[in-house]
Amino acid sequence: MKKIDNYIARSETDYNRLYSSSLANPEFFWNQIAETFLWKKKWTKTLEYDFNKPEFKWFLNGKLNITENCLDRHLLNDPEKTAILFEPNDPYQESEKISYKELHKRVCVFANVLKNKNIKKGDRVCIYMPMVPELTVAVLACARIGAVHSVVFAGFSSTALAARINDAECKALLTADGSFRGSKIIDLKSIVDQALLECQSIESTIVFKRIGSDVTMNNNETWWHDEINGVSDYCEAEEMDSEDMLFILYTSGSTGKPKGMVHSCGGYMVYSTYTFLNVFQYHPSDIYWCTADIGWITGHSYIVYGPLLAGATSVMFEGVPSYPDYSRFWNIVEKHKITHFYTAPTAIRALAKHPVSLVDDNNLSSLKVLGTVGEPINEEAWNWYDKNIGKSKCPIVDTWWQTETGGIMLSSLAGVTDDKPTYATKPMIGIQPVLLDNNGKEISEFDKEGILAIKYPWPSMARTIYGNHQRYKNVYFAAYPGYYFPGDGALTDSKGNYRITGRVDDVVIVSGHNLGTAPIEDAINLHENVVESAVVGYPHDIKGNALRAFVILLDEKASINMDKEIKEQISKTIGPIAKPDIIQIVPGLPKTRSGKIMRRILRKIASGEKENFGDISTLLNPEVVKQILNES
Ligand code: PRX
Image (tube, rainbow, N blue to C red; front, side, top):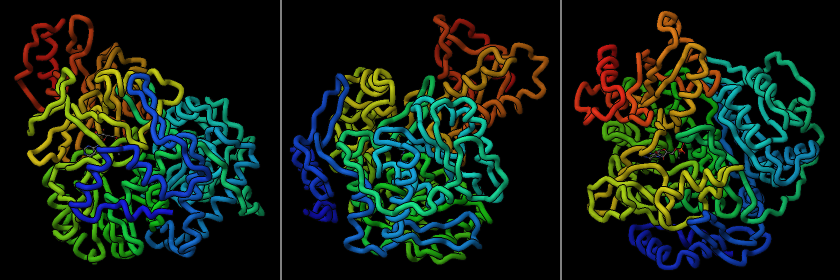
């Protein structure tokens, strides 16, 4: 078998050469990369696509199981190598090193448990768990038997969980009795109990005991430790077609319900590995830590799949950066001699607010590569990260990508291509980005802001929105025919480095989390005293963006507890992450004559603008702008 190492760029010349060859003949290029994996049967065609349908298929008729590539393959070389290094929430509790051999065993055992529950290839399994190794085991056990995992971030509310379970008609739910988050204990099981009242499709629920609290076990609910007892650790890997579904992961959209992005087996495997190795320049003895949660795409691609496919040691951290104090991340870096540290700009900004002695008391000399993901990083945060964490000797990879793209799309390659503060820099090898103007014409000038689009397929692109292909077409392919439209604005410098300037739709990135404003408005409007609401984002020091809600009440006199009640309503419907920082009761919302809310004006008000609202004479109710400003 060819080695993937031969295709990893180790110098800028390599990058240029590989990038050119990926452009000149994409199919030939990806064919070579795919050949470095373990396939049960080789594909017959590399790519088939149609942007208009839209339809994208990679490595057609190839057969594989991704877990054989994540696990079995590595058992031949180095079975004792640590696959998962688990750092618990409690710093006094021992960390756990799980070797590839041990992880393989646990995955096979749990895969057999799923089979015993009558879970079959193609069935959807919802996973709602804290950041413990069993979460990784659950994900891989699904993949082992060909079940489709749908991981729901364990900070989501019961209503959000139920909506996701119902959308995918999940047959089983894997969860825990609770989770530790810093000094708090979250009672996951009662959230699950509440959710399951609204879910008909779940036939069995398996509960991992993490906190040991008293919980009520209902019909068809069993404990994880009872289920694995005495179960065989041999489980043949199901043969999957390259285009079979591997997982569904929900992301919020600018309207309506969340979108269940569907990723398939073959392309996702190839692309997550290839980007992991190129971007992070991981070497076999490195200890890599991505601080994300597996409930998000970053965790899927760069805690679980990318690193394990590459045979890396991947750290899983259960806790939060602030517990027991703000030095926790740096304690962990020293303790485990972390070489690669990948986090969100929000975390960096929050940590930078604290005395630098919290950093300096730790030995961070093991660090070689730093990374950021999820939102634009401002220059100040970048410089703080570079100076205090990287000691000005670690490259910083600013990785731009999305749940939909499955893997990193724009980023420097650590130490290989240049980084540049606030720029995600260059396209990944194989990726063809362009900037478009509002008429869909490609922009070639630099420093001119445009709409980012991708003009050629790549292996890990989401194939559809679960159960709603029309929505997939409308959201990503309709506005600019012939391109994938991610919803971000960008510009390039004279060297072709990309800088992401922010969303161009009604999605706001708060603390690195992608939040559609429409579902939050829907949640607010559920309150019986609310007539209408509009939610917009505004710049925030730490979170990047925060939310401000403008709310019209039925009875203004009853506004005393509205702030609290609206926040509770949002927590209940979506989760605490979606709570606005500011809720302003307003007499009306600026609207066009066709009744559309002019969010542009509200965004300006929320950002502190007092004038310069442009021409508001076309508004149905221009006087409302003044009223909102007076009451701000
Ligand atoms: O707006 C971009 C922003 O996050 C969006 C994708 O969010 P999500 O699907 O939740 O995935 C986040 C983790 C990959 C993008 O459309 N975003 C992500 N990374 C960056 C970014 N914005 C600027 N710079 C980044 N590095």
